[in-house]
Length: 457
Image (cartoon, rainbow, N blue to C red; front, side, top):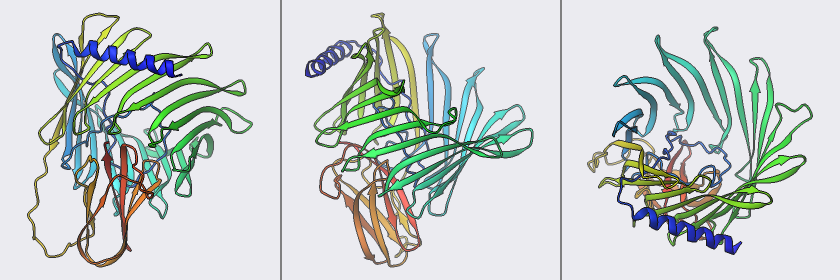
């Protein structure tokens, strides 16, 4: 095992040196997530390096600037040609609409859009998806969230629009179950419009620190005799709590068989600098992909080099930021089987720049509010400002992406006014937590408000 790992590191270094010696345009083909900031939504997921390696998100900036438009380009006729773009509309801090347009005949033409509605406490209630045709916008899919008293999603219902009947018809729904504040299972049902049928089931297992160690997917829809195993993910962590290895397995002939394995290595700041992916072949793990990532002093990704062994496909990605720390451009180049470098893809990002608000406009807040933490992303600590219109019993708690409580920052009776709490990136036992996205929640006697923040070590 040590010999294999050493070979991976050596190969990654050789690839990195070879690529860095090439004077060429850089960048990234991995699209950043364009999922809107759904405050209060903590849904389950099976995290694996090979399926979802760490990536930037459009709202990655230190000042709370809002992403307005990101545009993708392809290399054609020796120039960058637009292919499609996404634009975003906001109502205060919350995203209200996401619109996708495709490039055709030298113009951007509307394709589809999503509109988001929220509860009074800021949690996402409903998403309506529409598609553009010659007659205008037409409904396609609608999703609705239901929460428990702790602000966790317990039901997600999907409806499809019936064009013939001009009404919404049930399609599927997901029930989420929690044990000790951890997501324990998710069960999916499908509908024929009249009745609900079991579809699949996700089960989660955690270690003593609340890190997910196993996710098992079982399938029901095509089997008449109950749940049958289908897919499984096993995660291992290093002594610092960072994901070190993931193994995917498939249920075949009554046994779990290896499929894909991913390993990670980190720098002293906790950044994932080397990811190696293996496939199971003839009872051994064969190296299939290597990703090496370089970060700047602010722990922002500036370059990623990817190598696929099966066809010697080499990709180089570069990330560029403006003076406010916002990601403004990604460009990618690639080489196949040693061929000359070629341009691949380019993305550009435009933001709405926030400005400082004048102080002392009002002696006391007019409403309860939870501000965006600053700095964000942060390392090693960040400040969280909140406002209370009246004195109240409050708590400020940090959660991870799985809905686990990481640490309670403040609790007790607090007077009306502007207050601040801080988080040093540790859990309730004082242990440093891994880099990633976290949620912080303000709970008062009359409201629950939640926001997202990013820790980069």
